[in-house]
Length: 483
Image (cartoon, rainbow, N blue to C red):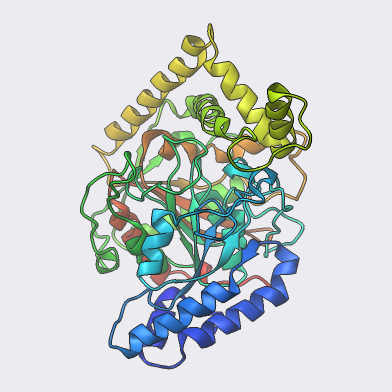
C-alpha cells in the first residue's frame, strides 16, 4: 500500500480495495518503524488521523467521492492546525498549539484528506538543507549522510521514503522545488496569491507560497486542486477561478515553445546536471516541443536582491515573537529589556538570528535606500526579464539546483555557499511566477531535478508538461534503497 500514489489511492478507495482506516494504520506503522532514521516528522497525529479516516470511509459509504477523500497527507509544521503543536521547527514555538486551522489545512480537511502529522523543517523556513531545525536535521532517504534540501525537507524526505503519498510544503526561495529535486519528487510552487497564506506562519510575506509535494505531477495536480482558491482572510489572495488541473494533464506538447536561458549554464552548474537537463530537453523535443535559447540578463542579481528582501521581511515578521504574547519566554527576566533579549536570543537559532540581523540592518535609517529599495528595483528588472521571455516562449526550462544533495554539515560553516544552492529557484519567488521541479535523473546515486517556469496562473501548463514527461520516463518511479 505504501507504494501507491495519490491517484492510485483514490482509485483503490473508490473500488473498495481497502479503506482509508486500513491505509492510515499501515502508514502510521511505517512511520513509527522508519522515521527514526529520517527525522522527517516533528509531530504525529495518530488520533486525529484515525478519526478523519473513519469519517472519510463513512462519507464514501454514503455515496460521496473525491480524489482526496480518505487520502493520507502531512503538513509542513508552519501550517496552523487547531489544538496541535505548530512549531515552525523552532524552540520559540515548541509549546505553541494553534487555536485555529490554516486555510490550506481547513480546505484539505474539508476535501476529506487525512492528516498523519506535521513535518520537520528549517527553523522558520530559513535554510536550504533542513539542518537548522530545533528538532535536528532531516536525512535524505537516498543517502542518510546527505541533506534532503530545505526548508520543506521533512515533507520531501517523508514522501520520498514512501511514508505517505503527498505532503504540503512552502516555497519562499525554492523551498518546495529544491528539496523535491534533491529527493526525486515533483514539487510545485504556485503563482503568488494562488494558495492562501492565512494561518501559514510567515517568513517573508511577499515571497512565501504554499504548494504540493508528491511523486508525480498527477498527484501534485490533485493536491493543488484541494489547496488553491481565493480566501478573503488573506489580503494577498487573488480572486482567480481555479481550473481543473487533472483535466489538463493529457494535452499535447506539439508546438509548445520551451525557452532555455543561457545564463543557467554557468561555471557554477555541475556539468553532469547540465547533461541531464539537456537530456530532458531532448525528451520533450520528441513529444513535439520546440526549443529556443533565451536570455534572463538580470538573473546574476537575484541572490543579492533576495537576501536583502527576504531577511528584511523576516526581521519585521518575527518581531512578534517577543516572549510576551505567546511562544518561548526566558526564565526570571530582570526587566522588560531582559525579557525581550533573552527570550529572542534563547528562542531563535543561529540562522534565524543571522537573517533577522541582516534584515534589520537593511531596513535601518541610512541603509533603507541603499539596500532594500535597490533590491526592490532589481526585483522589478527580474520580473521584466521574465515577461519579455514569455512573449517568446510558453515555458522556461533549466536545472532546479546547481549541485546534487551535499553531505550533512558540509556547508554549515559557510552560509553563503548554502544560499547559492537557490540560484535557479529564487527568481520565481521574486517575480511571483509558478515553478515546478520534476525528477530527471541521478548523479552519484543522488536525484537531480529539472525546473519548469510558466506565466502567472499557468500551473496547469507546468503540470501538463511534467505529466507528459513522466509518461515517457521512469525517473519518478525510482525508490530509495531500504524504503
